[in-house]
Length: 149
Image 1 (spheres, rainbow, N blue to C red):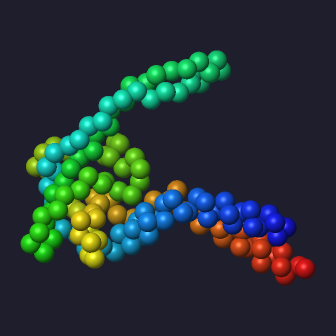
Image 2: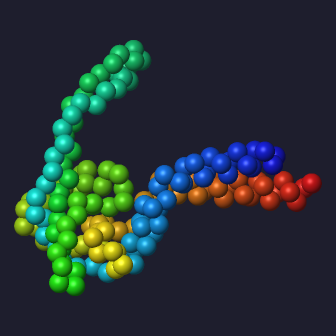
Image 3: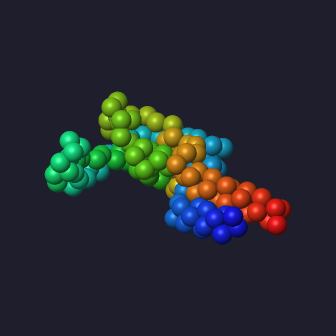
């Protein structure tokens, strides 16, 4: 049981480590101050994603894609900053850009200690919690295993 707990702890740590900064920032962003910003442009990326069909044949497929990230500018303490981060979710802009165009006014939430870090939608992105959840289960099993022996 203790070995299983240590394995769970290691898996949780492995899941948490790569996104630790985004996890902390997304948690803190819930209380960030806001300011008015403006959409000032966009950056598009195009490419071809490769995958497999879902009809049971698993034939290779190539699907073209286009992703647009909007750039917004905002002012904090007399200094202008710009960012393209919609939220701490990896696919934040998808489905949220229907009504945006250059000049659109947006509400920007910025980090008070580093105003160049900003998002349009603050808050915790729940998939970031997978690693810490597995760590908690691992610690629970470890405590349970140590108490039983």
